[in-house]
Image (tube, rainbow, N blue to C red; front, side):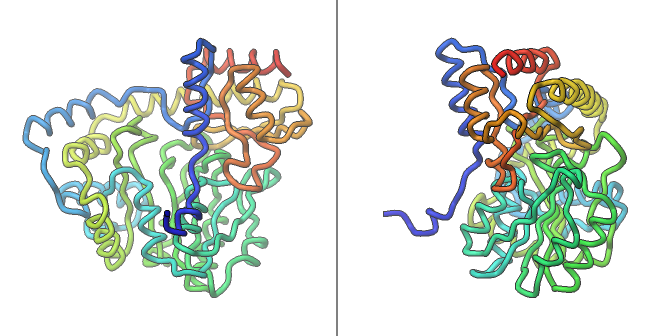
Length: 383
């Protein structure tokens, strides 16, 4: 018999749809994969070479739970330069992927019954882990008419003295929305007023196509109550390498490191060496990747807006589109299944990201322009 807490644990639907789509492919069906949030580019050669060199140099053993000292130093220096506020090595915790930071932070901070405010539609693991630890999920709707940003007045009615944590994500999964400086300022003020922590998920920070990335770290007054989550998976096509990290107050970093000791022990040493090269080495391949994503975005959004029943905002970041499909007359889950079965196009229902995702689909444009154009043709044919 499983522990009761397992009933409260959710999942990530993208992997379920991927498995189903792969099964259909194995049966001979043509499938265009727009369901999984993973760059379709290879990891840049200089990063791979750095990992191979590290393996040859003996970086195959345990390291400190919080990360190797030179890695923490490099990541801290990168954030200091990139976010414009001093980050020290002891503020950094390195984990195998970004998800452990999310999981450990909620586990370390949230008691049973305490509230966590989070974006909806949003990354489904937020709500899953809040429920798992016995916290109370408080969704903040992201509305199309506000370009999928928060309504700060609405948010003020949801944050109170029982709010332990506010989760923000910009650029955002699944909508591609980007928070503005005034949004960040309002969140910072709410966190200070109600003595709440902030978890800022910024793993898509290098994927901003219009304007510049705004970080909660631009507001130094909330630094001591903020966990800034970053990772290498998206910007450097390193999803399978499992390398994430975060900056946080030293006292919390020590506790997060303790959770790491009790679970993963540490992040693989040669992967950390590769992570240094990613941040300090040539950025040409990463920049080319971002330029291609922007070109795909522009082409795909234009095509979606020509489909009957579709209406799609142009996202400012990440590599997702979140079209409104209410004009098709179908519910989100119904259209997800219809397009997979009839058109061979794998996307995700907006409800995979929360109840406020009804009426939308999420497509990842981390696929070639040729395949994206083919997907538009196949969708049009069945609609």
